[in-house]
Image (cartoon, rainbow, N blue to C red; front, top):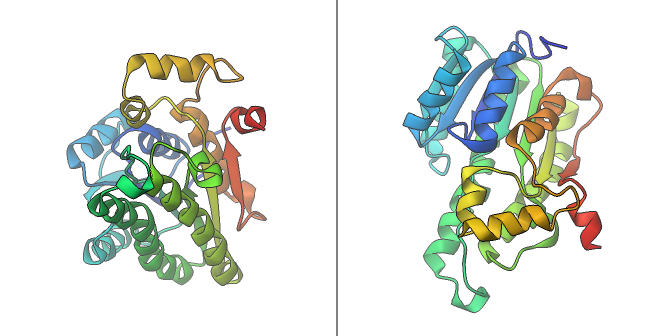
Length: 254
């Protein structure tokens, strides 16, 4: 099946690598016009190149999502270029490994919250009015399994990702009636540059594969499949939901 996002316009934050890049590529292949938004503009341009995109089908935007004026300008650029915004994927986030709570530096806490929570808030704040103006849309927030059960290796990351889940619920309650569906996914382990970096060693990464019920962690393309469905009209009756996508890892942990 192709063309599932035909005539749709999407903003994907964190589109320069990993899951965000896979989402941009999948959206483009399904007919969407895609704004690849990231503070890593070189990576965003690489995503465009891999998509085989031109200015009629995709654009790269240099944006710090924790900066309100930059986010507002991002939305304005997309509307000016393509006339509307139908889809927002909040994928940009940072993960910094930390010691236990009492030893976490305040600057790491603030930096994580600024990006992972405030950034999602700002992107929703400035995109929702544009969606409503053009008849509605779909927002997909990317949380983490860490937001569902917590992780010991990063207190601020786990708390920030729990915040994304609750922001999804509140936003859905407020804007579903105005035609904006808001949902969330909570990936488990996924083979991305961020995950390989956060595990701190190749041996730990291999252990994550070996201990997984499927014998492997997920791929970015597998996550993009779920995001595509939530963004598309096939999920027209879905709003306010969080989907755990972890290959059965949390079920095994229980």
